[in-house]
Image (cartoon, rainbow, N blue to C red):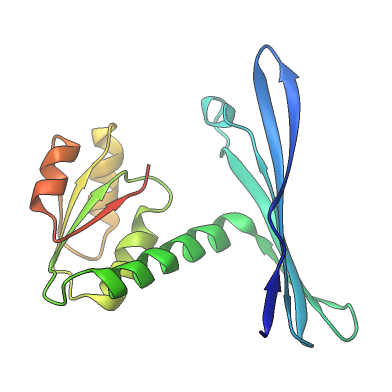
Length: 167
């Protein structure tokens, strides 16, 4: 009862040539403490131009004064929230003796996913697959847990005690 949220609002805009963009707003209220919202723009073809597909901001306002208390980029917040949900799901659903994390997709969310799952299980090894092998190798270099890059999604799934699909 302390936190209320409204349904996410989506506005779509035609950009011509079959292209579309969206603005999404996600408001919430923390009883007598704060209001917050995340506003993001989603432009699917941005990555072809070297830009993230999703960009935006999150703001936290003091409920009693309206004073802004936090303004931050939405990308980090989104990655951490998504990873937190994966950690929660792992905690509730995965065997306690799980030691190998299979990861399909090694993009922007991958490191946060590894950290979240490692918080709730004693992960000793990550087995990762990505369509771009170079991106998977970059993740393997950055991960704090030994990470093996495999040649297919099936290989990652077969080796995994816990499987995260982040595509």
